[in-house]
Length: 360
Image (tube, rainbow, N blue to C red; front, side, top):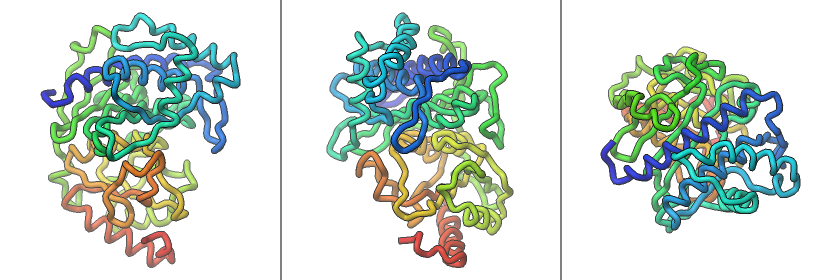
């Protein structure tokens, strides 16, 4: 891909390939080193190792850039056995030409904490955002997950790379948490703002040129009302207003279920690939907000395919307010020319169901 971010893309894809190999080694293990965080969500040894690998690799190439990521190293500092296991995972990839490994366990923790304490900033020229394992709950069940990498320039997404180790490069919809790549490779989807989105198989170091790269057509730019297909999370989360989502789909003539993923990055990937073209997500509580690492970069891939994304109020998504996306409530994504119709339907359904309090 010819773009102003060719080197960044090369480095990020190489790092995601190495991260995918770490995740694939851990997902097959019975003991994934699961730790419960303060918000009761799980984190595994793969989350820690991948966040360290991504940060170290990109810092080595772009030492002035800043980082935001989901994890902190507090659990590693408090648990020497867990720390040793994560450090050991990274040592298995020390000779990989596509990544850079921290020099010591102490530096590994420091780099993880660069992300864990980082925040986006509209004034910052460049900030990388990582979700080392998006969909940890399904990852521990050996189901679908993603590795999400984004680059923000002054708060705006300019690059996205998502590794999807369970999905085949020729995946057809509707895909779900149980969809598996029989080859065991997975796919990587990537794009640069204004230069389109592309997909190819994940391959080992040195074999990248053997994988054909496919440019994703701007399918959402030509979609009609009859083409609408849903991407959502069905029955796995209690944070969304399922009854509203179901009624919106019904009124728009969208068959349920469509693509079904717990991971937000995989939902955006599904939209980018054209496995679906509508996502509606209304949180049950107005104060519930998204987290930047679940969305940044991955959502841009759908926009590169002709999609439009706002929150439930119709506001543009703001990635500059902090680690949580407190300026927005929920998401409405649809083909650009049909977005107003979908958004209007969402508002009608919420008011009719007595949920107008969920609108601004």
